[in-house]
Structures are given as structure tokens and as C-alpha cells.
Image 1 (cartoon, one colour):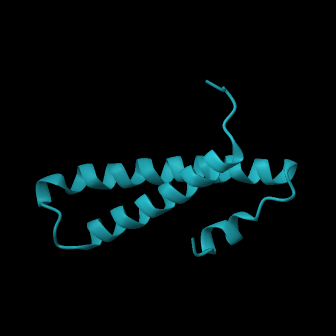
Image 2 (tube, rainbow, N blue to C red):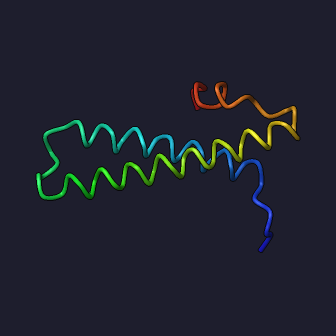
Length: 80
């Protein structure tokens, strides 16, 4: 297995995490979360947000090297 993560893999992971963060936020804002699970679900959101930010940083570094990659704003605002 290749030790270097491809640009496409970073893009897919970033977009997937962004979607998961949005879904988790929506879930927490709904009335579907049992009171006894709320704290755990909030911790899951915090972990997802941290992972997302780490991939955003990784992607921004890739953009500095590969000028053909779209900016992080273009990537996150694009309709796939």
C-alpha cells in the first residue's frame, strides 16, 4: 500500500467529513437525541470537527504545492 495519500483521497475525505459534521449538527439540533446520549453525541461532533479541520489543513498544504487544486472554499462550495 502506498504511504502517501493521494490528492483525490484527501478531497474525498474532506468532503465526507464536512457532510458528517453537518449531519451530526442537524441530529443534535433535532429532538431525536435522547437526553442520556446527548453528551456522547456532542463528543462525536467535536471529534468529527477536529478531524475535518485536520484534513482542511492538509488540503491547504497540498494547494500550496499543487496550484491546479481548487481552493478549499471552491471545494467546499462546489456541487458534486
